[in-house]
Image (cartoon, rainbow, N blue to C red; front, side):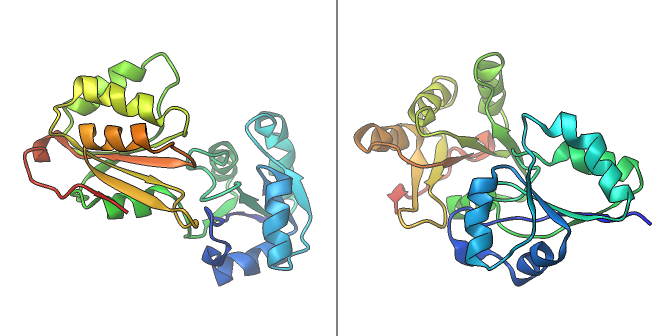
Length: 235
């Protein structure tokens, strides 16, 4: 009888965001597959979880896929976690999930923390239809993607690093109207959480005068809404 693969979200900053169910699963599975075992060990120690840890990340996931599928087929219960948030969303998780499903192995996904949902809600932009883009391409295709967004009616949400956030906002301003609004959230759930919402020039000015630190989620309003008024705020 085959085992089961659990995808378990972990806190994106505040350890209190771990669910009771997630803790219970991590305590009862045979093994936890972790993006960085050192990071996950801190979480496990906090919740007194002693389950065996094994590294499973973008640099070794191809080599370990068949071995892990073999363990699942033998009846093992495995849980996969990322360093923060839901595995598979801009983190390792897709390949193992796909192969497990192809092999008829049960996959259970627990609901939980992910950074882009709070950022979307805090933007105040229309959310009846939105597009999640993960991380922008580093070079090739970057400007093409932004040109597409400039004409897109949907709300767009993506992740960005602190050393690229200002450059990215300035690049967006090259293709979008100066009335186009953007909401930038950083350090979600952490002590220095901040969201800055307003026109692109307003947000660019903010991060020009305030050194950007932490992990960022950027929400770009759809082009169909750029004429509507919005209060420009930093909180």
